Amino acid sequence: MEAGLPIEPAAQGWMKGFATLDYIAVALYLLAIAVIGGSFYRRGATAKEYFLGGRSMPWIAAGISIVAADLSAISVMGSPAWGYKNNLQLIWMPIAYPICAPIVILVFVPFYSKLNLYTAYEYLERRFSLPVRLLVSMQFQVLRGWHVAVAIYGPALVINLVTGFPVWQCVLVMGLFTTLYTALGGIRAVIWTDVIQFFTVTSGIALIFTVALRRVPGGIPAAYHAALEAGKLSFINPSLDPAQLTSVWACLIGGFVLCMAPLTTDQAILQRLFTTKSARDCRRSVMLQAFIIVPIISTLYLTGTALFAFYHFHPERLAGLTNTDAIVPFFAVRELPSGMSGLVVAAIFAASMAVMSAGINSLTTASTVDFYQRVFRPDRSPEHYAIAGRAGTVFWGVAVTFTGLLASKAGDLVLAYNRVSAVVSGPMLGIFLLGTLTRRASAMGCLLGAAAGMIAVGLTITLTRWSFFYQGPIGVITTFAAGYLASLFTPPPAPERVKGLVMGA
Image 1 (tube, one colour):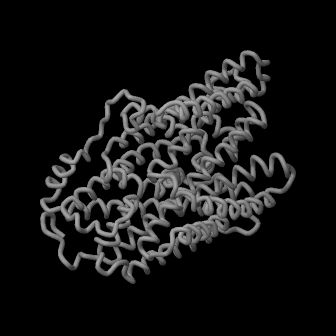
Image 2: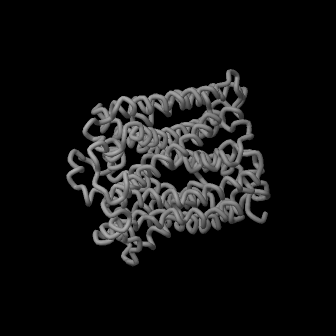
Image 3: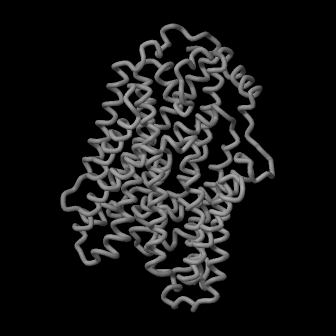
């Protein structure tokens, strides 16, 4: 369709709904992912093979997989929905990734690479104590468990829109399906299917963005003026009011913590780094992720702007939309030709399947290595822990699937996970900074600092109307300061808990 021309009847896919060709495209995609993921099943696999892929994964695949681990329906549906309903002021958040990357490479990668870790929380036991390791591992499991739950709610909206099946049934089907191939293939299946799903997602979003703009009468200039007049192109909110959610200061300061914390404390992200062959490959993966995430997230918000422009000129075509979080699949099903609709729906499936498989795999690794192996069954064979990992994958898959049934109560998709992350990620990052940057920090001081950080965040939520973006920084600063101060009143850590475990030591 040429820009500037009205939509022809032949393009009115909404009249026929989701066509047979679309169902075939989605079904074939799901089948292909299941086959590819299941093909990595190895009977008698060891824990190193199941959880870390034998530490032999290519750095490019690991870097792309890091992006896919967070590029769920929260982003693929939520970011365009935010851009469609509001503006571009949240676009400043991902800019923190390139800023964080050098810090991660200089401060954290050296420790993670030389210690041959399965989980990031093993480092905390070596630096502090077992209670610190278990506390932070549990915090991660709460945070990532909620992230996965919200991620599988997104495609449930899609299936409901396409088929009319109840959302709760869609959540169950998606959750159980993804759990199956993740349990079979382990981290190799997760990473390689992540790569496939990353390219599926980016192709689907590019298609939506391009088609929406081409079908605006007057083309890009008309779309620009319509969005400008409606305030959709506003991308800087200079307000100093801490209650302003989209203030550029809130996005940059809070975004720094929300970006930094996963790269340094989140097992779902770090496990991919642990699968690489060397410290050099680990650094490459971090830099690759940092450089590709910004244009992708920016395009997602701009896609929402393009959709606004399209519907500005065709408001009658919004009839039937009951939830603006579903604006992307709504456009795909009603406006794209048969086959293309299936591609976009498959892309949304891809995003959430990647996040869910990554999430339950990392949750399983943390619970198996940090709790089952370390506390309950410390002297079993590597094959035993791989079997336990498969059982744990099934458990976590079922748990987050049922939690996903509650995700509809979370509000805007794009903010649902960030609200939880802002509460937990600050104290977690503060603990890791205490460990890597200070020689004096002790285990007890660290625990007291984390408690102070959680209290500070809780008080901020209760007593103020500040944007949740500030909760992460408050948690980090309070945890670090209180933890260091409390450590001064406790015995200094033993030399073996400092040498080689603190920057410069």
